[in-house]
Length: 425
Image (cartoon, rainbow, N blue to C red; front, side, top):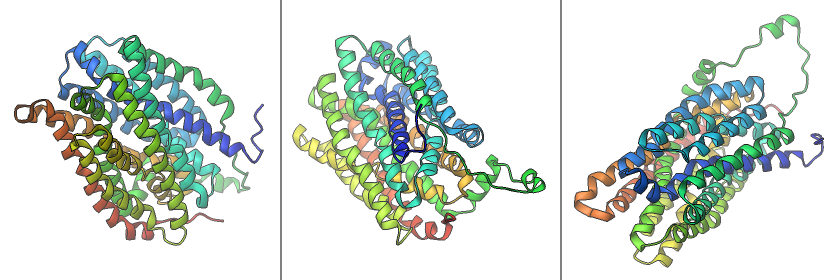
């Protein structure tokens, strides 16, 4: 039996949440490295594949994230996360059975339904186990699941698709997630709340957490809107590039699946993991003196991300491209720890999961819902002018959204200071 009272238990919880989050992004983005073989076998153009990679997943993932977060606040975060893992992993495995556009579209919608229950309850569980002075760092460690999941996804997808086929790649990663779920539920439990003696009348009058209650609190604060749309613009570029960059590199440098997977995997593990952890550490340190650093730090990172991504996509040298792309891969998700910490402090503590889900609703509808589809659609529109390079030029345009995110992040600095709710000690 796991001893939940021992000092190291919060670290164990964080490690398990990190593992599940890695599978979240592995299952979400394995589609990118498999773009070429899937498009070839199912006869899909870039616009169709971009539609599969974005809106069907994003709409259900974003919208259902809010009610699932409310459910987690009421019945338990760990149970909701474990159930979500089983659902999204099952639909990932089913993607290997797709016979055309509509079946793959439907299975990706199912992945979105499952993943809707994973992230916001995890944010709230971390906030329950980690105090404010260490929370951004903990969220940064948790967010390392993004580059780890992406890296494992491109590597596993490339090798399995090359050795067998792309369908077996989906089967393999989907079944692996289902196997992990019962171990997660055995190890991870919600943090017990100390009993608070209240009079019977007061207890019956205690406010119930509702979607409208959470949204009305957040909607009244400019900081919420500025950070949500800043993250959304960053995610629009990030998700679009994550889906399409492997194909761009394979086309530009005439690479195999395995070569592209090794290139992207090394970038994501080296840059992404370090950048997202650094964001949490710096936000914890700088945010103690000035809460405005929570949005200011991501804004600085986005200003550097945009031009370095563009440079990496236009350079003719694979070696130079790797070093150029290392910088934005380290900085483009630095925002996760700082902004998610700040959002949780725009609402009372008992609404953390719901506040995170409301933030993710906007972020993912804008980012995941638009990014992959927009870049694919632009590629088709630019095909007559740029031919095989049309997707690369679409990606360069997409990277410009990081600059929009930076402007919104700067505007959020003063608003966060005004809207921050300090925790009772």
